[in-house]
Length: 411
Image 1 (cartoon, rainbow, N blue to C red):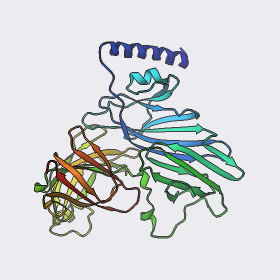
Image 2 (image 1 turned 45 degrees about the vertical axis):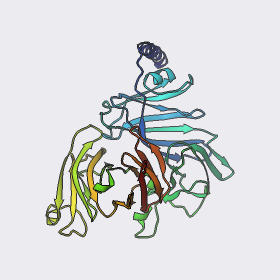
Image 3 (image 1 turned 135 degrees about the vertical axis):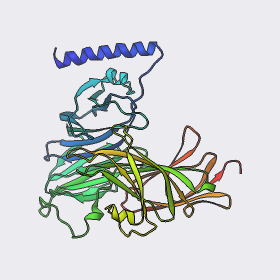
Image 4 (image 1 turned 30 degrees about the horizontal axis):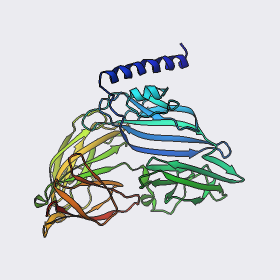
C-alpha cells in the first residue's frame, strides 16, 4: 500500500474511532504542550528557505503521540524528529485534521496537516513530560526574500522563545523587536528574544552582506558569560506561598542537564532561609530521584563545587544517573523554604520581597488573599482552586527584584 493510501485509510479508521468515542460520550484528552523554542537558520539568500530547529515538550499524561502543525504557505522538506532525552530518532508521519482531532488536537480546518510523532514512551503522569526536537526546512518566499543585496525575514511568531540566525557574512541592519544579538561560533549573527506579549511577535528583520563579518566568532575577552542566549534558557520556578504568618512557601523548579558525565544538581540555600521536605523526579521517566542536605564543612569534603563555604552554608544535592553523550535529563525539584526576612506579614498585609534570576518565575498567593501591589510587570491568572497566580517573564540577563503585597479578602 502506498503512503498516501495508507494515510487515507488510517485517517478514515481514526475518524470512525473518534465518532464512536463521541457517541459513547467520551473525548480524547486535549493535547497540551510547553517549553517551546524555535531557531530559524536562514539559508542561501534568494532561496526563500530556512532551517527550523523546534524544541517542544508534550505534557498530556499518557499521550503516545505529539502533533505539530505544518504552517500553511510553507513547503516543508528534510523533516526528522529526535527524542531530546535519549538523542535517538523518533518515528513520524504526516496526517490530516481528522487524525489530529482523534489525538486531542482541536481544529476545524479539514485541510490542515500535522507532523505526527510517535513518542518513545507514554508521557508520565503527575507532571511528566516527553521532550521532542523537530527538524525541518521551510520554503516560504513571503517570509524570507531578497531585495537587491538586502535580505528580509518577516513572520508573525507565536512561540514565545525564538532565535533567527543570519547567513554567513551578513550583518543585521534593522530589527523591530527588542532582541539580543549574539555571534555564533561559526561567525553567523543570531537575533534572539522572548516574546513577553500575549499575542504573536510581528518580527521583521533585515540584513546585508558585510566584509567585516568573519567565519569564526570574535569578541572581547571575559565577556562570554554575559552573552548567553536568554531565549534558549528553560529553567523555570514556581512558588506556592503558605499563609504569611508561617514565612513558608513550597516551590518546584525545573532544570535540564545535558553535559556528559554530570550526575548531580546542587541547589544553594539562600542566607536567611531554611529548607525542608526536598524531593525530585525525572520528568522524562517519572522516576523518583535521591537527594541529600549537606551543610558547612561537609560541602567541601564532599567535593561539591560551591564558592565561599561557611559553617552556615547549606545545599541540597539531587542525584541522577550520569548523563550520556547525546542525551539529556529534565528534573523537577520540590522544596519547602522558610524565610522570615523576605516573606512575612506586615501590618496585616502579606509582603514578598525576593529577586528572581531565571527567565520564568511564578508566584501563587495563599488561599483567601487578593493582590494589591506588584513592583514588576506581571501576568495575573486565577487558578481552578481560586488562588491568584503571578507570572514574571524576564527576557534580560539580570535579576529582577520583585515586591508583592496582598490582603486577605473581606478585610
